[in-house]
Every structure is written in C-alpha cells, then in structure tokens.
Image 1: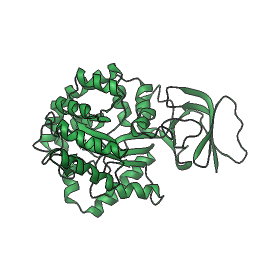
Image 2: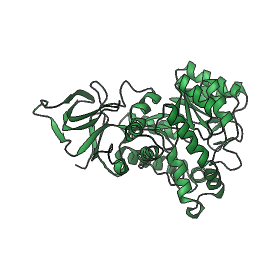
Image 3: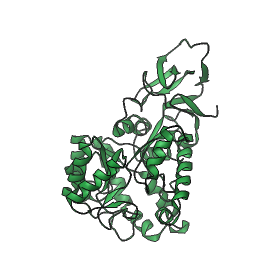
Image 4: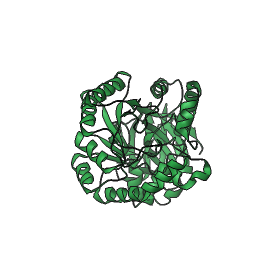
Amino acid sequence: MTTAFVNGRVFVGDGNVLDHATVLVEGDRIIKVEKGKSSVPRNAEKISLDGVTLFPGFIDCHVHLCLDGSPDPVATLMKEPVQITTIKASLHAFKTLMNGVTTVRDMGGKESIDICLRDAIRSGMIPGPRMLVSRRMVCMTGGHGWHFGREADGPDEVRKAAREQIRGGADLVKFMATGGVMTPGVEPGGAQLTEEELRAGIEEAHKANRKTATHAMGTQGILNALRAGIDSIEHGVYMNEEAISIMKKKDVFFIPTLSALFHIDNKGIEAGIPAYAVEKTRQVKPHHLNSIRLAREAGVLTAAGTDAGTPFNEHGRNLEEILFLAGQGYTPLDALRAGTSIAAKLLGVEKDFGTVETGKTADLVVVKGNPLETIEALPTSVAVVMQGGKVVRNDL
C-alpha cells in the first residue's frame, strides 16, 4: 500500500517547515519527503495537503491510561473492579490515538494493565498509541502514589523494586522523589525517596538499559534525583538555579504537565475535586509557573506530557498541553517540537519517530489550518491520523 500526502505544508519536527511538499509512504515507512513538484506512483492513495499541515505523530510523555479523569480518579481506581479499569484504559487509548497522539509514555498503572494494554496494541489486537510503560511507581512507604505504587525503603529495597519492574516488563522505571497533589497527607514540596535510594534504583535501571523518570515537585527532591542520575524530571514545581544548571549540563529533560495544574485549578472543589488537591494545586501554581519560566529561559529540554487521567484531564485532549506551553512563553514552533522531536528524544525513539523524514516509521497526523499561526485550534483540528503506514482516521 502506497500513500502520498501531496502538495502542502509539512512540519518536519526538527525546526524546519516545508511548503508545497509531498510525503510518500510505502508499507509502514516514509520513503520520500520532497519539496516542490514531485512524482507520485499511479496506484498511490492521495491525500491533499491543501489548507492543512502534516505533522509527525504527536507524543505525550506522561499519561495514566488507568486513571479516568474523574474528580477523584485515584479513589475511583482503587474501588472499581480491575476488569472495568481495563476496559476504560482500552477506551482511553483509542481516544488518544484518534486525536493525533500516536505514542505515549504511561507513568503508572495498576496490576499490569498498562503492560497488557501495551502488548495488545503492539500485536494489533486493539487500536491505541504505541506505549512505553513504567509499570508500578517506586515510592517510599506511605509516599506519594502509594495506593498503586511499589513501596520501598532503603537503597537495597529500592534496587529490588526497580528490578521487579524490569522483570515485569517495564520500559522505564519511575521513582517518586517528593510528595504530590493527589495523595492526601503528603506535601508536594517534601522530599521522599532519598538521594541514596534514588541512586540505587536509577543505577539498576540503567544497568538494564532502561531510562528513568521521577515525580519531583520540591527543590530538595529534584536535586536528589538529579544528583542520583535521573533522566527526566516530571512536574518540577520548585526548581531553582542549581537544578536548572544540572539539567542543562546533563541534558535532563523537563516535563511540566501543565494540563494537570490548569484543569484542577480551573474546575476546583465545585466540580467535586477533593479540597486537599485543589488547595495544594493553588498553593504550588505560582512556583510551578516560575520554574517553567526558568527552564524556558535557560533552554532546558522540555517535552510535552499531560498527566492525562488526573481530574478533568481527559484522554484524547492531550494536544491541549501544547497550547499551555505556548501560553507560558514557548513559541508555537518550540511548543510543537515539545510534542514531537524533543519528546521522541526523551523516549529514546528518535531514530524512528518524532520527525517527518525518509526512512522513519510513518506515524503522521494532518491538522486543519496552520497551527504555527493559530495554535489555539490545534486540539480540535486533527483530521487524519496514520500509524505505521495505516490510516486510522480520515476526516478530510
């Protein structure tokens, strides 16, 4: 099967934008990207790019497909039958793919649902985005996320917990360096796993060629994780100049998850979100936005991640994160790169994904209009989704 996207605007993903370009797909690969007039095989299915823009498949670097975006999703997760969670997660995956996100990094599931969902999608059994999964989050006893995380205390136990996730099929290992918003009784700014504990777990993951990520809001926890060798900082609410300096020096990625912040703040307790979560969110908001400003001004590698599944942060609305980044001073070009090429580098899949280039896997998305000029329309403008050379949505 050959598909030709013809004569239009192509957002390559590396900072370049091609006008009047043609992209040819054969099988599951991009075989030609050419600017100007280009020959197309007679038998090719043609998709005109007139008035639209072609993007690489978007990537969301922080989702929770097992969480349903309800006012108190963790409470819902803990009380509902695992079979219902599995069905919900499958529907969340479908919505995510249909709305232009062809790859996600799932940052904490329940009872290996995320592993099974990943494998079912890979086998073609069900539709959904390509998934990299962390399995159970590693946290201290009673720490943030303990409800469905793997509690561990001391370097040896954290090392064992990391090994368990790898044995269970995890693509990366996630550690909880601080408290957070959605766990009652813990402070977002408080350090949790120690530097020594984090180092033990990170070393174990790296030995197995797995990347690592950390939920990290408070300054001390962020610094603990950075000194221990973490690959990405999730949330990064209370970052300081020292943290920024280390991230720049070591090319550590930053995933701000603005969607989680804004949806909780906008909906509030009136929508049924627990009061403690709303209060903590509003307490950290100015610090979070300041940290994002520091990271942006310093040129820290920033990737898009929504934390989808948290209150009113719905699966399928993932591209809103790109708008939120643009609202915090990122140029439309940089915000879009955060959800394409930079995200691919964070996940370690840049050889196959993240840009529209010859030889790469044909995960492609067509968006109506030109988001570089009217980025506000991006989340509701997806018209065509191609995954692995197969068109799974076409509204043109």
